[in-house]
Length: 485
Image (cartoon, rainbow, N blue to C red; front, side):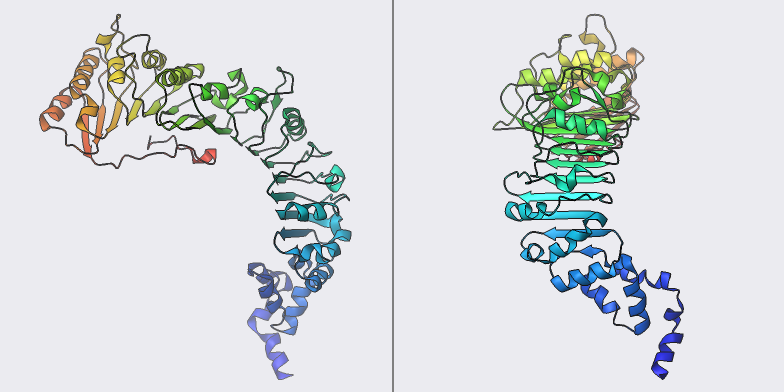
């Protein structure tokens, strides 16, 4: 009696039940939750009466599943079924089937034979289901029947890995996130889903696109709320971008593998750039040529990133290098203020006004900062030197900063660099900043002194500390086009 009174007047037991019931929310395991009900009679009474504490089911224990279902009353349920633990198919999960109508989230990960057994029980509707995450190990598998009668009006998140389901379902109007791995290879099905899911904000597609389109060539589906589109597909293609209107503010990335003399990034571009409202204004461009090719655009209205890994080859063929560089002129590059180029090593069109470098620079009247990483710099120096074109035109007239990174002293062509700086200064386009980063050699002091006569600020660094970028980021938001460029 005395002990009971002490518990009653204990400070923690003066909390109202609504506040006290928040404590088990910090428990990491079911065992901790159960332990909290044995602290005292008051705690047990409060926690057991709080239905929301008993809504997470892993269906590994028949008795526990029954208890949780009873204590959860009519609260929405979250069921998580992990492969390798077969009890959820032997009775525990069957206890939940009559309660499917209050299912809020379902996660499954396991082999196909378990998936078949599970989906046979998912024929009734689930009007409260907000998250469906199904991952089948091994070969892509189709369920034996239509899940939840194809009616999921509350679904917000749909994650399918190796699960082949006809799309769309009846009511995907609240869908905001879609992740597909090895989905049906049918453009029309995807477009129909997108059309009926106007709230889609995040779309991730991996190995889930076809090589050809079965949709009309002029069909374009708007995605007004899109924030992220990430496509990992083989082979490289532009099929989906041909049929989607990407809104301002969205980030788009696509990655692939390629080989031979093909032009994979060009194949990734949509037929009409009018589809890409997210690239209505570009402020930064990054361009990489090497074992991996990468092209990235960023601006206040969004970004686009395309990257491909070259198979069984160490360098990009020269013809492909120039094709890819010239493909920049398909975009609104006249607004770009920053350009970063990596691993351009071709000297085929050195000093020619028809070269891809000259043609691109000719369009970049607002370029302020140019960064060259592991490039042969002299083609760029020639293009920026007004003496090397017939009309003495100063390309990139607003260029103020030039950053060069190389491994040895010969990579910088210091004499030609000095001559370019002099000529630009004489034409009223003086460089404000020149940064030279050499990995192995110190630039002679007299060369630095000469450069400082025609460049306002010259900085020389020794070492390999130049910030490098990930060539193929897994998600577009990892692409960084800011000051470290």
